[in-house]
Length: 554
Ligand SMILES: CC(=O)N[C@H]1[C@@H](OP(=O)(O)O)O[C@H](CO)[C@@H](O)[C@@H]1O
Ligand SMILES: [Mg+2]
Image (tube, rainbow, N blue to C red):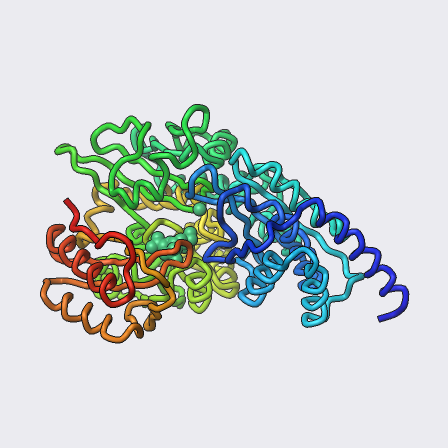
């Protein structure tokens, strides 16, 4: 380092030191960079925001690219908030830097500069390298001041910041990817996002010219969050090809309260505030619009949920048909987690004959595994997912779509595939993009919601939680489907599972909550609930359960 660089470094660090005093860390407070960043009650987060602004600058210097910072707590209560970092291609920040994020967030006030200095040394970061950070935030009341703290952090390390204000999480990921591909992926503006996705959607539905107004109609539960706002902004771009009735728009109700994708998935019932008629197509976004689930109510008043597994099945079936029609040699894979319904996995493997991989919970694991295929479809059962197309797959599709010597059938399949690529937000799961994709797939194939639902029947399933003294006593293997410790737990689960038909159960520590999650499925809801309860009891007894013993449901 030259003396000049040292002087610059010292001046910057002095500024950081001065500014960080305005964002003090409560002594002793330790936070975890979990499955999707830091997440806790908003009051505890000011120092974390400031410090993540600093870290984003370092990450930007290291990667020589624009980095994203999103302020949101997704589906969690309005009082909570959170922050996550976005890497250059719009993906979640790499694991080593999650570690750094924790070190920086948890450093006591006087140790902050040392921790930053150590990271710079370890990563050989050049202080003179420029830095740029994009910021987005959700609609929580606390998000504005918290994103201001991020901005303070960025500016105090002399980084360049672009504050987009209120955005959905996937929009922020999209902006970062556009910027770092010199706009090859799209323009890094909300208008660029609306244009790219809606143009592709409008092209796709041209392959379904006789859609009725009824077929174009969709009820959307916006979870009283940012998704509702952004969908309203996007509507004019859709040229009436989708007619949206928007509920839970955030004008009256509380964010995520008895509504939104997470509520609908966990309750397996409709959200508050949506006026659904029999058979009508409905979907719910979550609070930051990166998840979506579909549902309808049948003539007997029964609620039908079409979750992430059903969406993955619909999309991969569609893609497989098109790839075959186009005569392209592209391998399609579907990535799921242990929470995927057993029926969906069986259907994909046995009927659709696509490769299915199971990975650990958390989008970063799914995203990573999906990159190994020419076309990788990944969805968590809760509705978070997307499709990744490899660069060479996109090239082959584009070439064929323009090839004047090929047959009309092949060309048309390639053109549909090309628009499918463009309607998809490949940076990350995106409720708006997934909604357009599902709507287009249904339209092009002339499928009703009921026909889609009938592709396979979900096995009854149940998710439960058990409180234990120390959740780390449970360790798992085989994509979290088997427990390695404590001794005897997996044997107990195996013995219980054997007593039921079509059954499966597993236990794992949650990565976002201080609890053990239990999942069970079996031939009937009654058997599923009974299996889930017995597994909860095994966890309670063998893994140090605390508080009241798990009770059977009803
Ligand atoms: C069963 C379940 O839905 N788990 C969720 C939940 O993770 P846990 O590690 O199970 O707490 O939050 C994650 C982040 O939002 C999400 O990716 C994941 O799917
Ligand atoms: Mg979310």
